Each structure stands twice: as C-alpha cells, then as structure tokens.
Amino acid sequence: MKDVFHSTGFKIMVAVVFAMLCLMLYTAGAGDSATGKLFGFITIPMQRISTIVANNAAVSAESAARSKEELEAENRSLRRQVDELNKKLVNYYSAQQENAQLRKFLELKNNNQDFKPVAAAVIGRDPNDLFGQFTIDQGSQAGISVNDPVVTEAGVVGWVSSLNSSYSKVTTILSPETKISAMDRVNRETGVVGCDIRAADRSLLHLNYLSAGTAVKAGELVVTSGIGGLYPRNLIIGTVKDVKNSSYDVSLYAEVKPAVDVKSVRDVLVITAFQGQGQALGTASSGASGTASSAGGTP
Image (cartoon, rainbow, N blue to C red):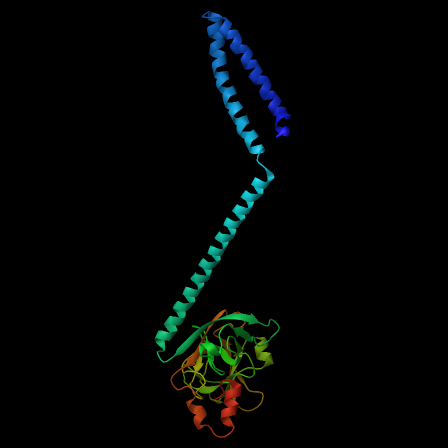
C-alpha cells in the first residue's frame, strides 16, 4: 500500500489533480466573462479525465491492498478447478477408448455366438522380455482359466499361462512355448504355428511342417484350425511373408507376420468358453494332452 503512494505515477496524478483545482477556482472567479467561458471549455474535459484517473487509481490501490493470504487462497481455488477439469478430461478419454474397444469386441462376439469372452486391460509388461509376455487385470474371479486363448478383434495374441483371483499372465504367440494348430486360409493346408528366439527377435512366426509341394504363398492369411481344442477355429494369426526350406528336414515352413503387435497391445479379450473347447484333450493319447496343455495350443 505504501509503495502505491510513493510511486512516481501517484505523484504525477496528484500534481495533475492540483492543477485542475487551481483552474476550476480561477474559472469560478471569472463569472460569465468570455475568459471564464474559454477556461470552462478547456477545463471541463480535463475534469472528466481527472475523475477517471482518480477512479482508476482507487481501484489499483484496492487491488494492491489485497493480502497475500487472499491471493494464495484464490490461487489454491483455481488449482483445484484445474485439477477437477483434468480429471474429467482423463475420464472422458478413458471412456471414449473403452467404448471404442467394447464396440470392436461386441462385433467379434456377434460373429462368434459360441464365445464366452472376458474383456481385460494390460497392466504390466516386462520391456526386457523378448517374447512380449504381459499381465492383465482379470483372473479366476472373472471365470478365466489356464490355457484360455487371448485375442483382440484383429487376431490371436496368446494364452493364459498362469493366474490368481485378480490377475493373469499371458504368454504370447512369439514365445517358443506357444504351438497353435493352423491352416492357410486360401489352400487350407495345415501346419503348426510356432516361434523361436531368432524369429521372435524379428517379430515373426513360423507355419511349420508344410509339404514340399505346398501351394502356400506370400500374402495369404493363416488362421487357427481348431484342432486340439485350445483355440477356436478361424481366428486370424497373421499373413504369410515368405516360404522357405526347413533346416531340420525336407519340409517347408512359411514366415508369418502376426496380425497383432503383441508387444504394444493394450486391451484384450480372453475367451473362457467356445464350441469344441477341450474336446481333443479328452481323446488324446497318454502324454499328448499334457503336452498340449503346457504348450498352449499344440494340436
């Protein structure tokens, strides 16, 4: 407050007001003379200006007189408002993303009436894991079991390898543990989709055990065959990139680019039940069912 009265601007304002008062007194003493009228013509606008200046100075002095506590309280109030708006914005975007994801999952469910799906979100991921294993926010309480297939609307992601009541670990299709009975969608030639460290490093899969005269070509879709009872039939796995000779026998294999980038997926669908689930496991020979279960999809 003291700084306002000692400022140069305030002193100039006082001087202007004093000069105006002197002119007003002189004008009053001049009566109706021509000189008085002339001074009145000059001083009246200046009086108006001086009034405006005085009013503005009063407002400025009032603002300067506001306490530090009042300013801090106002600042805290504004910050609370900003925080509330940010929370609403986050909730809006989260709801928007969730709705978009649920619409895609609903379409998948409508196309596969036998599916019993559980929607889940990825909540944990090891960035150093070459095979892209991750954790989802649903477990046995949601009806999920070990070996349940995990997918998105785009295709196969992997399978549930372990779980507790609230969370599940998902082993992806890039893991050497994963084996999926599959077929070429065009020629219906069957094989087993798997992966190894070198292929996983390139984010590729192998459709193994193709015959020497295979008709599989680059650009064709590879889908699940349903054999083994661990994956529903006709889920997209990926697209053939190339066909090569196997290093271990006379057969051929196809390099397959996965339909889903398992290392960046955020929302998934766990299929807890489907038509034909586990049927082959009940009729498998001794030892074969154990291999199928541990592999998460061996035919």
